[in-house]
Image 1: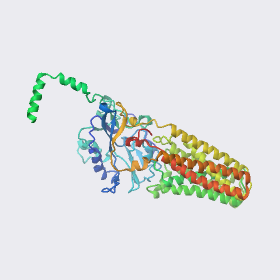
Image 2: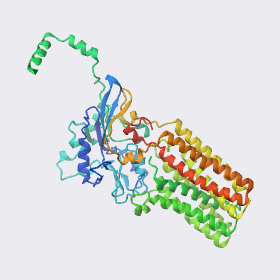
Image 3: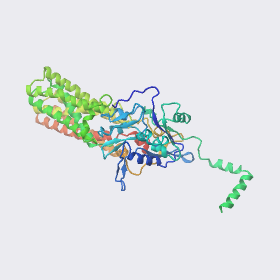
Image 4: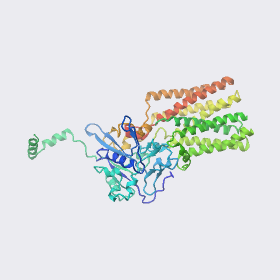
Length: 247
Length: 315
């Protein structure tokens, strides 16, 4: 049924927290996602013309890189984006067949491929571009929050996390229950003032993004000169040793 | 948004078909149309072929057309499902109405009631079509209060133009139908111009900044796309049409869909007879071409918020 499940008190809301301050843009989460999910619950994830011009395929996680600001104040931010498992997912309610659904027990948004007619309306209804059409099978595909990992009893408990979270080399991705205000992820969001993408649309994403910390401006030229002047004799000695050793 | 021909044909043809059905369902019981069985047969056949042909065309858009029947199940939440259910339901009273009119030669009483029922359901179907688009929050050019009135106005306009042509085959000098047609064309033109002005002067509240939570240091711009080639999102939602082409196509749509049909209908109203039949026929052809271009633009000019992640600053 594509009507949304009733939200209960203490509703479990599994999701991701993504730290834009420390993501290094290595795309490991995207490739780990593709690797796991190509043979997972929603698999296969087809690639078309994979070795030639115009190669394209289905991915559930994509890493965009943005710049903000100008000149010395500017910075680059790497921005991984996957399904946000919204609390008000219009991708679910627009579905004419009931293929798209939100699970009552943990809030994960899934597609039942066996009844999807491939009308693509859900991908139009998603503001974030989380859904990608599988032109091979004629059905819509999307992130499952690695439903086949997080509940998988064949994996050791520490491995029961989404593939993207497992692989992240800098710990920029966190997985947990955002419906529980005392969970690690909820506390992290509160501490770092994490927020929603496009809150104005009212989809109430469960996944949260932690904004980059503010205190990382590149030092101005004047500040660099001042700190050089203020350097003590000890520092000068060390720099002389450094130059000597670098020869 | 990518303008898929199957959907363009579907919305224009079904819009005309259901609007014609509504006009026949209301006009015949009120004795405003030629009462003959042959007119009833021809007009209803045209309406049904347009409506059903459009619906069949929409199935070509599906990845799994053989499962299309499943789309009737989620009418509680989905406008697309509601449209499917109502479009099929419309054909039930239409069948009774058609049998009564064509076989038994009556459009009053119970038959007339079926006609009025069919008109109501056909109108509701057009409303659902409009709401499929108007309910999509990520697309500012669709999620606004002009879209549903536009679908009604353009559907009604095309239904009236076809009706005006058909009526002339039975009554060479009609007055009411062409007069109403003329007024409806002008109203549809006005509503389309208002829509165009709306999308030209406003943009979505969402920006590259709100889409990324960034922007404390200034404007957000794309530094590197996630992929070097296109993907489904860009093919489907990232469709772009150059401003110059847009304006040229709008001029063609304006001329073909509104100016010429209004002029031709007016000439038909003045002169009638064989000449009126020809002008009404030309008006239908011109409007069909114009509406296809108008509908193409409705998609091509629509900007999806996902493009904010691919370098668009505003949508």
